[in-house]
View 1: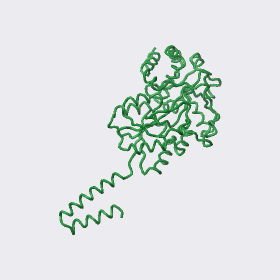
View 2: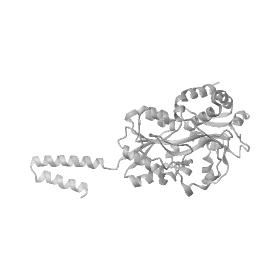
View 3: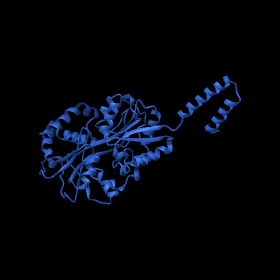
View 4: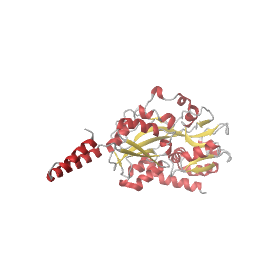
Length: 353
């Protein structure tokens, strides 16, 4: 019997036919029934993420539709400006956070997120992962990966630098757009890239590179869409995969990634369950779904990154036309956490000289 009809029948019996004691018992029964019914209603799963995932052109809308078809739930995105903002919001809200999941942190920020103590084990089988590095982590589940690269406009720059060294030594009228490492995961990625290549000389190299920087944006999307795509500079820090979108969707070869001889720094993007979530089982169900083809097939051309699992023939052909880094550069996330403040301070000092 539908609950609403059942409720009307019982209420009519209470008021018209039964003694007060029995009415009380039935009232309690209705209260318990109502509570159980509310508990089994479709829950909301709240995911803190960033614009490039949740935007209309990103994978978020298709992922939401696919997951809701299997979960009897509502998947809601809370869109913050960047991965750095996701971490900051989580830290500020603490155990009172309304997030069930965070999606959009990466290997540069995950140790800071781990240190908050606000995340719960994922309990997800990671056997399906297909990453350039071995991954065994109890809190974070990868959903895509890629290498940082400078993307250039071939109509403005016919011969791009072929290394970080050439970029740093280029004439100062070669302007680039980068992102702030304090607020942007790509910005932090360039910081780690420079540090990996130059070690303790990174500060001096930043001073030289500073003369080529047209602007430093808060987030990747601020620089890419508002500035680079409007021709404000011929190069921008982005990903080796970014040209795939232009070739497959825009049908143009105009924007390409420059292959750098030192190798390219790796980014793995991750999601995690928030420990205070009342829907942790559902959040873990989402993480399981995240490693399925139904989720991953939306990554290559909507998040424009490599999928975290092998999609086989579903990987778009344009991915075979991307640059292939000669070497993958990567710091252990714990080492990043240990030195992050020191390396950011080094960058700040160089930028203000």
